Length: 158
Image (cartoon, rainbow, N blue to C red; front, side, top):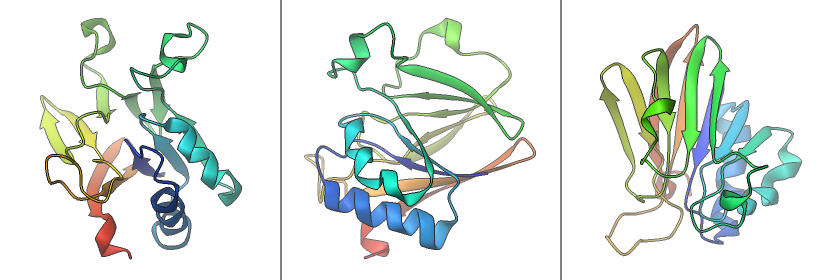
């Protein structure tokens, strides 16, 4: 399964739409995950025919609604994956069989292996953020429990 990750879109609908088309036409994405900060921006790409998971961010009204999970743990193609907005994850959610953590919040695109768990932050979707980081997103391929992730700069697809 190929997963497209976006985060921290902050109302930049044009970037969301462009990346959505890239996910569909170029990357063969089967699932899109918006990891918060304006997760409803993902509604702009609902018509692509790709499943979308929206994770609320810490400032969102959804985050404080007990009916809407702000941490989702899901088995995807034999890999247990945790999806959240903030990298501050309660210890009880981190288990030894967790293969990946997808998160946003920091605006810093990063792929790290932490004790056998792949941590992926796709970055943000502002033209340039306050730290000087350019817009980016991620594509993660999960196949038979094995993961391969890459960060893609928005400028590389436009």
